Length: 363
Image (cartoon, rainbow, N blue to C red; front, side):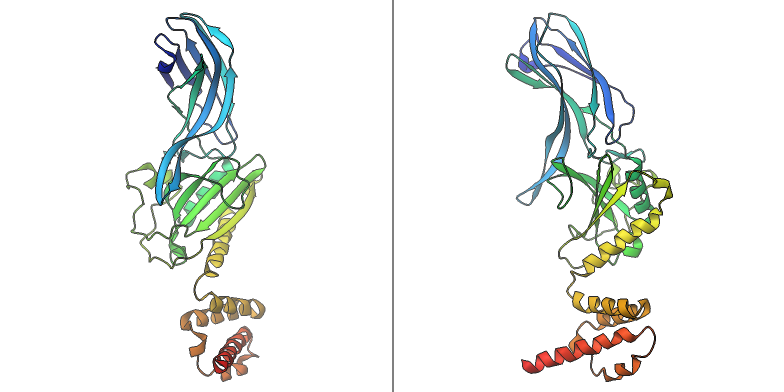
């Protein structure tokens, strides 16, 4: 692709700049090659510097509103300190290294609605001007594709893939923004979360996966937050199904976070379904710990850990169904169950009931 623009702020008769990019697919950590073609105008011009800039359209929250602006996230100085004579032709080749954390613009050949570009900054006689950005297409690395493809196979649906200003908490992020991929939960998780937000931060040694459940707590209407005809609302070439069927809005509260590190190596030997599913299960457990009845649920799970999986499931089920331990009634008969395999954990319910009665008596 070529863009051509007379740099008007440099005055009438200023130079014309063409930028030609190699249109081969680019991935995070890769390179973009091309050349800048300078054509002298009606008069000679002293070029102070010629610089390439990587720019992104980034969302930033301000006063409760989302605002969009351009952010320069990398620069490469090509040349400077030369004179461009009248009608002179000068070509400047370049190789631009793409940062590892550069966001994705395509998934399975479908655009994600993310705007990245390469533009020229030219300075002459103390004035600067920028060429129009040339679109940059970034496709996922194999490790990114493996995680995204697995989430699609598990049944998660793509909502959007936005760029957000700021740093993710506790990450090794280096760019001033990060990409947040928003997903509807798979049917099996529809009662455990309202939304899953995914950030993939790649580096030369591997990738940091950041998962966040219920960041916004938006209810589902069975359709994407964007128009269904938009690229981000599509199925992304089969990697993601459409948004999940409608589900109830779960209680709000602190978002649950999960962080995992994945190497670039041995991708084909990993059980991705089991691994990613374990991440989701851990995230659900973290979110459960923040719900209003987390004490009762956690107590059942803890007892079940000591007594066995079956006992834990029974105890957790009772705590969740009855909710208020003070209303459980007479649990004296539970002493008789202590010797039954898998049900030893039920004794904890009695202990909790007794503690509740003692506290009430003191009141």
